[in-house]
Amino acid sequence: MPGIRISDQQVTIYMKSRKHNSQVIAAAKAGISERTARRIDKQNEQKTANQRQWRTRKDPLDSIWDSIVVPMLQVDESITPVGLFDHLCEFHTDKFKPSSRRTLERRIHKWRAFHGAGREVIFIQTHEYGVLGICDFTHVQSPVTIAGEPLKHMLFHYRMPASGWAYAQVIYGGESFAAFSDGLQKAFKTAGGVPKVVRTDSLSAAYRNHSNDDDLTERFSELVTHYGFKATRNNRGIAHENGAIESPHGHLKSQIEQALKIRGHYDFKNREAYETFITDIVARRNRRISDKYLLEQRQLQALPRVMSVNYTEHYLSVSRTSTIALKRVTYSVPSRLIGSRLLVRLYDNRLELFYSTDLIQTLERVYAVKGERARHINYVHVIDALVKKPMAFRHSQLRDDLLPDDNYKAIWQYVDENLLADKASYYMVKLLHLAKQSGCERQLGRFVAAEIAQRQLPAIRECEAQFLVIEPNILKMTVKQHSLSAYSRMIPGGLHG
Picture 1 (cartoon, rainbow, N blue to C red):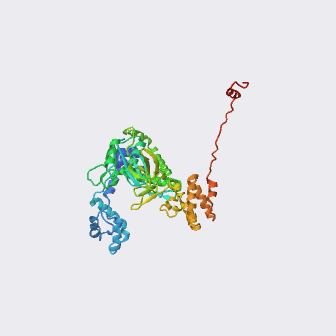
Picture 2: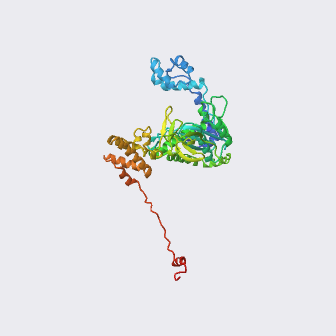
Picture 3: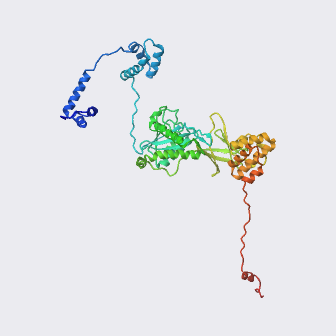
């Protein structure tokens, strides 16, 4: 515009707008005339034409580029500029100076732009509501503990990429079919429907990976039929084909780690408390996309009336030691079941014991370390039998497993060192029996351990007086006072007969 000086800011705005717009539009955005715009373009053309095409200093890579660097770049595409820099600094100090590092990096980048191999391309996918659900297992690196004991676990992670809705479940074993089936079915139930396609990686629980075909395992095929979805998988060994779940793995685990740090510690009272913690975090993420989730939920297929099988069944006999063995783990059961044949339904996190068709016991599942055996013994199951022969405690193979926590282990160590062998066994068995009777296992253990710390071992009667509350069984009698007329009717002739 005539009479008004063009500011540097207007020139900058014009130059930025000119990259994507015509001269007329860019001039209007900058608030300048078209004539001024033509003058600016002409000046830029002159500057480009006048740029020098010669070097002002000697090329520091002239003696090594064609003879050393290029042959290495041609041999291996994965060689990095840092690797080449270290090599030149170590073996070609007479031709290369470390101060030329940035020049080397820029030259390598330019060479690969002209002569390098094609790079891997990520293709952004378009997802329709209700079509695709993706699931996978992922390991949690956070040092979570349960009552001070490290918790080895992973997460089953399910996600519908169209809306971003997700479900996560704590898994205590490996990538078994029981864990996969249980997690997937609960994800469907929580989502309120089933997508048309469910995609996984090459899980051995779902696919026969020794075959070149996409052969489903028998149990997974039954699950697919029951819920009416199509099962697909990505190519073996290519995790990023499931990018819609692999990237969210990292986001979810990062959020869990941050929530644990804000919480102040990694310890939980029990497994249920940790599972609730994970559920709350996922629910928090889902609330942010609730509008998209509602749109997707309308497109999902209806759930079947009942869930499919998410367990395996085993028939086991209870041994004379009141135990059963399954998957290299020995579990104790109530001694009244000795000699019985039980149906055991094995889930990812529990065992359900059935006598005939009746559920009689539920046990927490334990996983053995690869190549080893494990035991899960509850003293409550056998203490009534052990109290009849307490001397069997000392040399029992299950002795250490019968002690419920560290307090009781410390108590046994003390009485074993300070009492006679028989008296030590008798004291420990009676103490465990009292723990069962009173229902105050932890409080009793802490009390006795505290007394031992004062070098005073409390007597069993003293413990009973403090923890065993016996309610007196007083027979309540209700006396009804009858009227005199009722008595008179019992006398022949009445009172004056």
